[in-house]
Image (cartoon, rainbow, N blue to C red; front, side, top):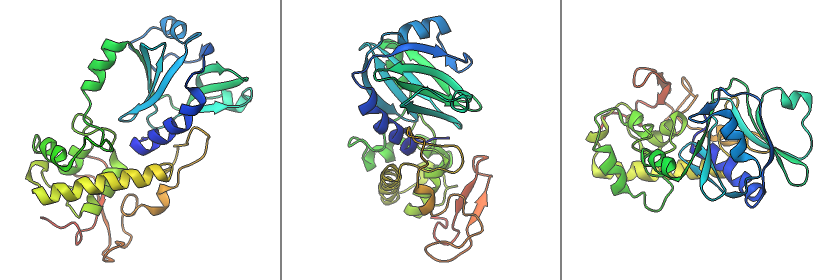
Length: 277
């Protein structure tokens, strides 16, 4: 599932192409991705709508239209938001869910092979309610080590699971939780509220550094993720633990272990470098 770096990459690429542009002729090919809005209402809202901003919140692409409504897209496993410079070929149309015409005979298309992603249309009040349920943005200047410590003190669940809890922290998923905990040298199974202040500082630095590096690399492509230009990311080439179970640790050479016992997802770590604190 695309996490903060992947969605941030898409948003940064789309922003200069969409802001100030007017949507024309919206076409919705599949309605099962919509959440909380009827197809006719959604299509009508997009027609002749001017794009005010393109931003990211957690793992969501947020397109503000007409200075009031927001189209909120969560791509999940197989979704992609792309801009095409010409009419779509039959192959490109195959998995198209939403198509909007842009000036200059360009097309904004949301494709989703398995249609696991979601699209919502939220007015200002609904958006406030929606965003208030999500934790702070880890790359925001307001997200300090003290902020992380305060939020981790709220739960006894494993620290890895806590990092991925979108109510506690926005945008971090399985890939970057694994990587950050390795950088911070923290056992992913430890209770979140048991971390010391120095450990929280280390983890805060690790979360921010790994997310920044992944954004700079255009995200991580393991299988389906593509940027808005259709290109893969490159952070997968420098992953230190995720997907490397059984391989040697880049720090100490110990064979990395992968378990599903923490949160039923793959957690890869080094027994020596991330031993019990």
